[in-house]
Length: 105
Image (cartoon, rainbow, N blue to C red):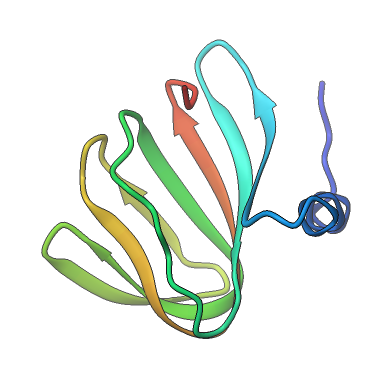
């Protein structure tokens, strides 16, 4: 069993001064914590893996393909492999738990 605390993951991500912290890599999946400050641009490109986002805190819009929706704490978004997607109009600092399957390369 592996157990993680969001506060510890966020502290490690912030200490490394990066928007993304990968904290789990297994045979069939990987996971990370992604953060964007209010007003910050999301530079993501499509991934080769299916992806699930769980919004831990903050508010933004997300566009996946041609669809756009508001997200906030508790929102869960599925992004199929290869789909263009990005967060935008981040109005409150955004923290998102990210799960990739298969693992991110």
